[in-house]
Length: 205
Image (cartoon, rainbow, N blue to C red; front, side):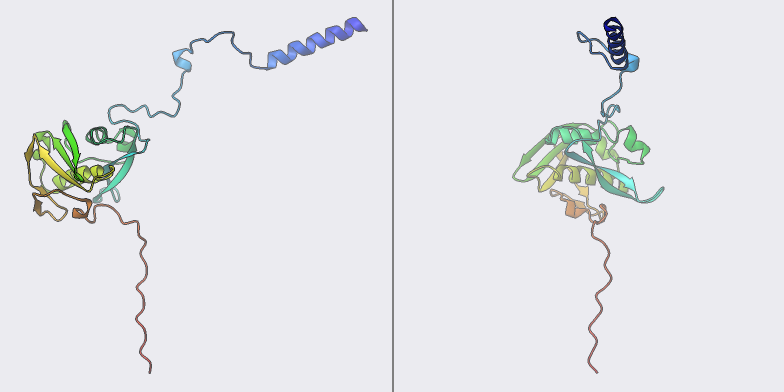
């Protein structure tokens, strides 16, 4: 009986170990074909749409409709240089598939971004001057809104290769002063719900 009991106990132990996941004695490499990303966006160039920094892209109200500004996240340091460089990279692949767009021309580069007295001075390359009309308004608004997301920024002044320029506000009027988000009303959808008008009080009879 003792010999039979010992055999049964050994068999049960072997069966239990076969069903479990054994631990490795030392670290080992995982074959490339078995590796998978751990929640990291694999899109290159424009960066991942995660993080606390925000940039502004353009999105149509409906397919083929007018464009409005909308913010998306970027996993970059919350500094003017990093955030604006992420903006100039444009939408990543996932955002492009979701119809996000940018009016900022490809190849636009940031020379510098300096905050002084509440005004962020953004020096960019000359590609921005290739735009006109609604495209220029959209590109300038993207820079102004993105810059205004940064701590301490109240207005944004955009210069090209160190030279001051006039830029259109939302109504098309050229401005030579620093710009604020209030110069572009209507480009960002209002989060305030529509309420019915308050009825006028009735006159007593």
